[in-house]
Amino acid sequence: MLMKRYFIQLSYNGTAYHGWQVQLNTVSTIQQVINEMLSKLLNEGVSVMGCGRTDTGVHATDYYAHFDTSVDLLADKAKWIFKFNHALPADIAIHDILKVNEKANARFDAVARTYQYIINKKKDPFRIDSACFIYGDLNVNEMNKASQVLFNYSDFSAFAKSNTQTGSNICKLYKAEWREENDLLIFTISADRFLRNMVRAIVGTMLEIGKEKKNIDDFKEIIESKIRSNAGLSAHACGLYLIKVDYPVDYFNKIE
Image 1 (tube, rainbow, N blue to C red):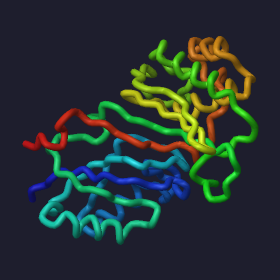
Image 2: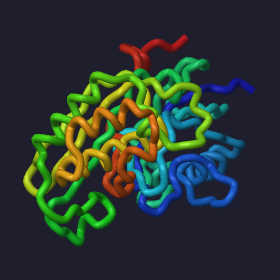
Image 3: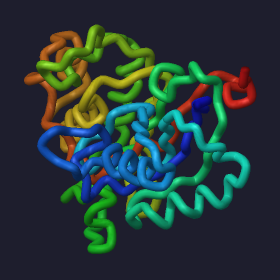
Image 4: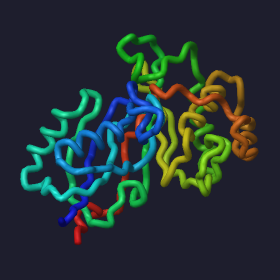
């Protein structure tokens, strides 16, 4: 039986889930839900591999995963996208199906990822699970100065979750900035890779700068210490979104 490899492009609201990755102690993960849906509709065992691991409560507006199946999904792609979405819960959506090379890998072939962290400066009951409400004023200028400091470093051990099996804590940063948009304060950060909990730890530490509990020199010392306990508390998961995953140029057109 000839197996074909596909990417699916999807988005999800992570509020109700214990993150992306399948876990032994819960069935409430995005990966588990998608595995079960695909296996049932395609009538064969299917296991998807995602482009990265998002933690409990974290969202994704642009996410990719790959899987193998003997079913030709491109013969009537619109039908399959409809069937997948009909079978999925309302907080997970499939947007596209892409045929790829049999060796294509959603996780290891990604060259960059972009996250946003959204803070609501005004209490909003309709954004309780989609943005982090912060009381009081924040010094956004100092927070942006801290963002620029990040580019002087590549080892982000100070913002990495402890006791993980990551082989390296080196990341190449492409973008880091805060911007204000009406009642929202949005942090955007791009890199070739991210460590577990890294974005939330950076945001949590920058919030201490914004509240003027720490200064830029403190921030540099935290990074240079490479010790997670020196950094601030992780910002709440509800405000974090994976918004973009980049692959090499013409990646989806190079099919052997």
